[in-house]
Image (tube, rainbow, N blue to C red; front, top):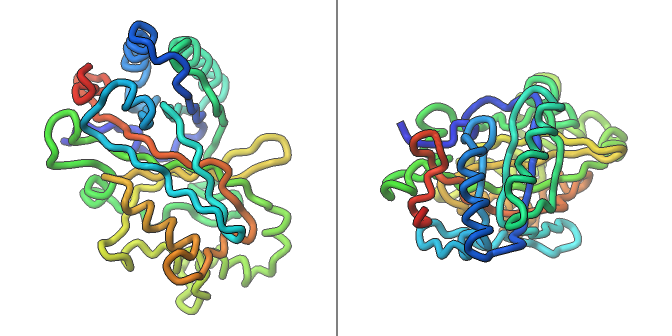
Length: 295
């Protein structure tokens, strides 16, 4: 078995929190203390951890390379880049427990790492976006999920690692619900009633834009997205894991029309407000394997 953070493959939890941190103190003692705490608290199951490029560079890492997030500034399909030093995905089924676990983690990582993003998320229905459409229908399964989601063949400290692409999308649900039912279906390229793909959906339909097998090479990612809501705002935390970042970059490039000028219909009612890449280390002995970082 690959030494993966098992929470990446596990089913979507009932509740979650996403914590993103910036590097505030890169001095040796503070950062080393934070890493010790991170290894103790991020078990890879209830808490999945991903390291950003600024943290990797501060540690002098030579193994995993986290590229720039592919920002896009076109008005019809804006995609921001909001890189961070660390991302923790706290998974569970009790919102109160997650709140206290997040508080404890934040305190444990200070002063080296400070939170810049703290977002509560949840599972809706079986695994639905707040529009009512199923999310992750085309997820690979079994060995195909391992092949798409995790690094293999690069040796200890790297094999079992995964690259995370994460974006917070803000939905205009009133706008979406004002659309006729057929136009809603054509936005996604699937029928809400039975989740069946619509063969004659327009080229802008999300399914048409992101048919993973249509890319060369195929652009399969492991999606683990979750809805979020705060006050009168709501949307989706797009969460995708891959053996590298190339598949996600290809999917996003086609969604934003960089290949053929056709923008994904999702942009008619939703926009991303964050965007970042992280490297999720493998596990060893029940702890994050940071040997490739010299730890």
